[in-house]
Length: 222
Picture 1 (spheres, rainbow, N blue to C red):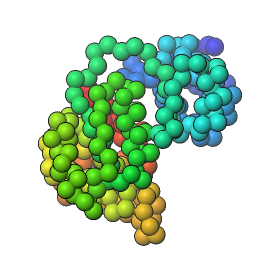
Picture 2 (cartoon, one colour):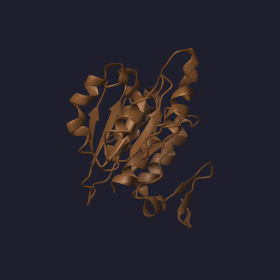
Picture 3 (cartoon, helix red, strand yellow):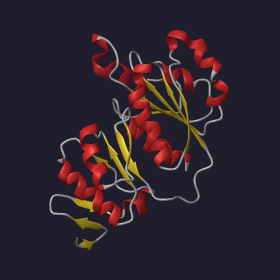
Picture 4 (cartoon, rainbow, N blue to C red):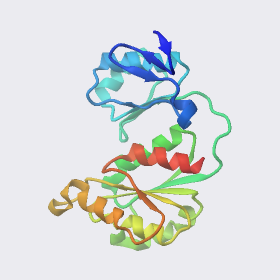
């Protein structure tokens, strides 16, 4: 495939082969809306260009198809992420911790956690420690306070991000999830609560955007 000006032309897609130089990680492939044949061609070009491969929001059927072409491809079904990464040097020394309010938030949290791991970060998970039983969070504070960056994933009223932020010195990347009943408006209530946090040091990504949170947290950790 022709390569010019930092990208490879595939006709239906232009693969940004300079992304890793600019951002520290290769172009990531968002899978919904793409055919499995297009995904295979994109993945093959990324691998040929010596890029890391991270596929987000990938369903199991398309993963099974891609696995035949790329036997080394790995998949996390909760996160709906597939990945194939090259060996890394100079990994960040800081710890990233991913925290969830409830177990229903775990799929989004796993998207963040796996993204962090694929990008070379030392990562810990602290799940199901929401404000309905705040004593559970307190039992985990020793681990959480060791983190250089913390991803907090919560639906319902999204209060956990403010609570964690008020207890630590590290920056918080807050992820609202679409978990909740009617007036949660599929995550809008949690999003607005996180955006209006009175605790300084909280950055907020879009609803259910675990990947975006993991990526941003990795930039902070590096």
